Length: 223
Length: 223
DNA sequence: TATATAATTTAGCCATGCCTAAATTAATTT
DNA sequence: AAATTAATTTAGGCATGGCTAAATTATATA
Ligand SMILES: [Mn+2]
Ligand SMILES: [Mn+2]
Ligand SMILES: [Mn+2]
Ligand SMILES: [Mn+2]
Image (cartoon, rainbow over all chains, first blue to last red):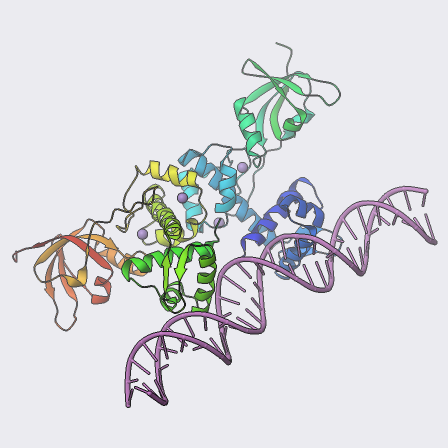
């Protein structure tokens, strides 16, 4: 069995790989809030275990074995989030922190029981895909909200799950996955978005919009 | 926050104190499956934290602060066992191992949510008392099954929870807490017990009987 | 009471996973 | 091309929580 730290490194490498491409020692260290030298040390250990590939100064890549483990941990995390949300009523801004600890600790049996209880779900409370038990991820394509223009309507697909305060903020506007809204105005000079959610007008800052991903985009005439 | 190892030591000292009285370094080491020198080391750490009292060669005792933490962890463990049993259908011989890991990791919020979901229970699936959130333990007195005599009837109060194979064995006879049985015969020379459970005759060895505790004892005439 | 035995503690070692500071290598600028 | 800057790696340390082997202390036995 891997240590919790090793599992967290693998998971983080996977996530950075997803969005970025090349994963440098520095990226990884920053993401995990450790010093670059600590990341170098763990990368070496993971390399001897053949879970990552790494050439000095060239960045890290997961091997197939490493990717399998990363997806396993991500599956635990997202199943736990959804389970805590649905079965125990933990608010959506609280599930991430709890799952972050539990993901390393639950058995395969518990994983399977939660999966069955939830009816083999494919998305967590923040809209992120839950890998199936074979590590297959079905991710519908989505677009960052900052790429939207005036008059476009869309549906929230996914939001970042690791900032509790941000999630509470989004929750106050009902900006959950599945919620539809229309862009009324994008202020110039990298300004905020004014949107219409179910008849309510709401202003969303750019920094917040970066954490919201949408799909089902349609051009709509001003109502 | 204490480390997982420190929490396990405190919990173990509490449990050994409960049944035994004096807790020696050796007892503790054997119980935790570590070497006596390792136990000595942790005892020193716990002493500097004022969680235990210890004089060289004299055994350990929990301080009030140490006892509070021990009970907190035991509460987590037993609530988790019951939760896994009732909410996720984990069999009673599987809950202990799972709870052993989760008990160190759940938040106070999750503890409270499980407690509420379960209706503020006072006993875990093995009949052990669940300390309330203030650390108060209500333990009904019970007697080891080995102290029973021919013709006595009783009700199972509690069974040891840490041996999975033993629990499956007991389960095969429905020897759960709350199950009534009558002693038909105690074989001489430290022999096995023949008992009657709901009309079925079952033979229980002495080693097994040591792990069963009963109450509601009544003298009954042979039926 | 002296000695043998058992329990406990001390001393010194190892792996993990973090740290800081220094050295090295790569990339950018002039 | 040389020099500056930035990223990465190496070297050496620290805390935790195990271990073994040796020394110490307490207890039992003769
Ligand atoms: Mn799993
Ligand atoms: Mn999530
Ligand atoms: Mn608690
Ligand atoms: Mn139990």
